[in-house]
Amino acid sequence: MREVFDESEAAGRLRVSVAAWRWAAGSGLVPAADVGPGRWSRAVVEAADPEAVRAALRVAGAGWAADRLTQALGEPLRCRPRVTASAVGHLVRAGLLVHLGGEVAFPDVHPDQVAALARRRDLPVLLDRHVPLGPDQAARRLDVRRVDFDQVVRLGWLAPIGSVDIDYKRQGGVTTVPLYDAQEIALLEVVRPCVDWRAVRTARAGRRSPLAALDPSPGWERVLLAEVARIARVGRAAVVNWRRRHTDFPDPVAGTDVHPQFDRRAVVAWLLAHDKIEVPTAPTIAALVVAGSGGASHRFRLDDPWLSLADDAAGEDCLSGWSTDEDADTLAALAAGTFGASLRRLTAPGTGPLAVPGEVRVIDRFRSGSGGLRLTLAWPAGLRGTAASGPAGGVVRHGVAYAGPGGACVCARHDCGGVVPVSWCAEHGDAVAPVLEWHPGGGLRCTDLSRSRGLAAVAGRAD
Image (tube, rainbow, N blue to C red; front, side, top):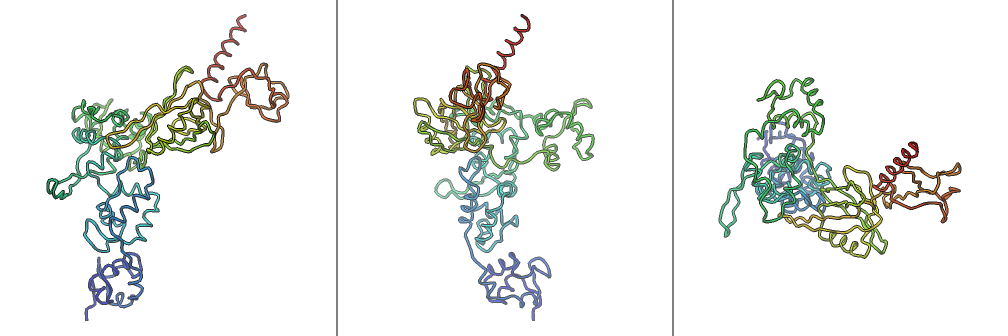
């Protein structure tokens, strides 16, 4: 009698389907192959419970699994293509899902295992690591138009790692589509900091790509220590120190002893291996709490935000970011009143929580070539202030007192000379508080008052 069984023979011995045996082996319901890869001893096979093996099997198609993983990525699905059935095949080949049958490229999988994968917080990282992207998917991952991505390929910044044949049937027959490494695509903005990626992303449909003016050159692939520092977002001295301390730091490929040049790909690989940079998994986000004239607050998010704060109180602040059509319509409606909307709380990278008491308006809605909607808000810079602590926000306002606070004042004092009254302050805690004017705390108004008070103090000493 046979003493060693492969998966088909083991399934036949137990009178279960091959898919049921695969799942039992992949989930640990039966012991792992004990004779060799995909081969079990007779003792292991005959010790298995056929009813338990049959009962454990449930099968889902690759299309269902792809939709479930796409849903897990969240909405809005910015800067990420939808997960496809072929991507499920790549996840199976990576060992993250068990192949239960069907085509290798579009396999059947177990729904429980898909659900467990969807709950993983590192799902975006796993997709970038194991699932290559076609040109259209790559353009969406990079958040640019397809014509801009074609320029990236022309410049030699990305090269195909494989290809797939797609049968378009009546639309031209079989076409070979190149595939690109999703992790390299995600890193592109990090490793090419000299490129104005904001200009590339906001190029309007029908306009020439900003990348078209660049010429392919071997020089693009060599970097000085200063650019390595820009990639890692550290000072040049830190890179010099890494090179001195780490014997595996890449050797120069050109340049001089004073100004050595390094291969960009080798440097990026070293930075990744030593946790000096990370692969971006999602766009940065600005969170907004906005109130219209009715007073009700609404929460929004803008992906990949760009915040421009004016240096002059007479100027204008701007915030732009990717939004959904529904959120864009709601924001426009809130800001459509006579006095615009109030920005009760804004948290965005690079600045502390901000608030604006009014006159916030939607000034632009831009539809990119890839279909995304970029929304731009603006407000008078002189109204900008600091948001109050707490998720509801609200502007912190300073009262500029007629006279300096007395000994009984317990209000918070600020460099601009203003105070934030509290209800139990004997001097400033009632409706007739002796203030000259109100202004938003932390904004340009505070800077102007501090400057004017400082100049007045200097003039007084000169007298």
